[in-house]
Amino acid sequence: MNNLIDEALPAARQLLIIEDDAVFAKTLARSFERRGYTVCVAHTLDSARLLIAQHAFGFAVVDLKLDGISSGLDCVRMLHQHDPAMLVVVLTGFASIVTVVEAIKLGACQYLAKPSNTDDIEAAFGNIAGKTDVSLTNRSTSIKTLEWEHIHDALRESNFNISEAARRLGMHRRTLARKLEKQRVK
Image (tube, rainbow, N blue to C red; front, side):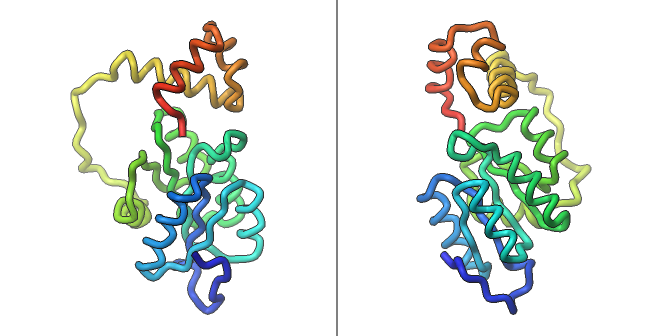
C-alpha cells in the first residue's frame, strides 16, 4: 500500500480506502494498485481526515461500520464536504434501505453489499448516472428483512449503542445481542 502519493498522478487515479478490517483493506488496496491506482488506507474517521487534508483523492471506498464507534456515513459526509466531485462507494456487510438512502443523500455515488470485489467497486465508480433499464422484481420484502432493517435503523439512531437500541425497540438487551450475533453487523 502506498501512503505517499505521487502528486503528479491525477486525482482520478488516487483512491482512499476507509476500512477497519486491516486484512480486507490490504487485499483491496493491492488489487486497486494492480489496476494503476495509488491507494491510501485509513482505518478510522480521524486517520481519513488527516489523509484528505494532505492529498487529493478522486475515489473513496468506505465501510459502513467502522471500529464500532464511528459510522461510515460520517466519513461519506466528511468526504463529500471536502470534495463534492470525489466518487464515494459505500461497502457494507448488511445493506438496509435506510442506510442506502442516507449514504446517497450524504454524497455517496453507489452502495454495495459485501462481498464485493474490485470489479464491482470499479463498475460502481463508472456507473454514477443511474440506469432506467434496471429490472424490477415482484418479490416482496420478507418479515425477517423488515425486522432487520428496523433493528439496524434503531442501532443507527442510537449510534450503535446496543442497550439504547434495545430500549427503543422494546426488547431485552441480550435478545438484541443474540440477533446481532446471528446477523453480524459490519
